[in-house]
Image 1 (cartoon, rainbow, N blue to C red):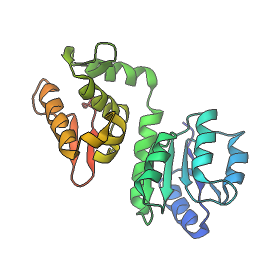
Image 2 (image 1 turned 180 degrees about the vertical axis):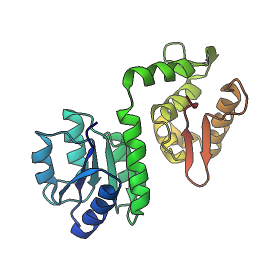
Image 3 (image 1 turned 180 degrees about the horizontal axis):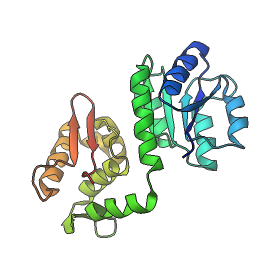
Image 4 (image 1 turned 30 degrees about the horizontal axis):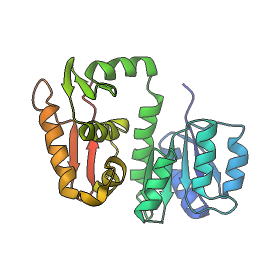
Amino acid sequence: MTTPLICIVEDEPELAQLVDDYLSASGYRTLQFHRGDDAEAWLRGHEPALILLDLMLPGMDGLQLCKNQQARSPVPIIMMTAKVEEIDRLLGLELGADDYVCKPFSPRELVARVKAVLRRSQSDPASSAGEEVAAVSLDEQALSVTLFGEVIGLTTIEFRLFSLLFSHPGRIFSRQYILDNIYQDYRVVSDRTVDSHIKKLRKKLVTPDEQLDLIHSVYGSGYKYEAPPR
């Protein structure tokens, strides 16, 4: 199996080299770019296993580079940013980024995130799809979830909420993100509304052993979906 190539696009050479060292020590091949336009030129003719992408770059900013890359090929992307405003993080994810880390970050944590994203993207599509569908699947027309063969009807809001979480297993969605993207007029709802719908979803989505929670609360951050173990 070919060793995955990680493309590091970061304008701070010392930080880029630190990330490079940790990834290399973990067995990955690496390639560094310190300008967005240089990375863009290379990516037009090459496809790495994953891109670590800074937001603030000379030549071309990270969001534009992310948008261009997703139009070419959906290569996994992890955003690295010092811009902690939520709108920047959300915009990065909406453009196709798979994850993000805020500076300063732990290189070990970043490597762990790289491994997690690669596991999701490099798993065998046929076998993964078969196993996942057998456990959990969604029917948008019927507004239902099939859980271990049992069809469970949901309300429109419940279906939208679960569909959002289900679309990115392991990713934490803040209450504010959910309010902004699920509810047509989030001004008339609140965090408590989200919590109430999550509670109702949990009651409906009961696994056969009644012990496994598909939706997890992350204290101070929000909610995430964890797929049933295979």
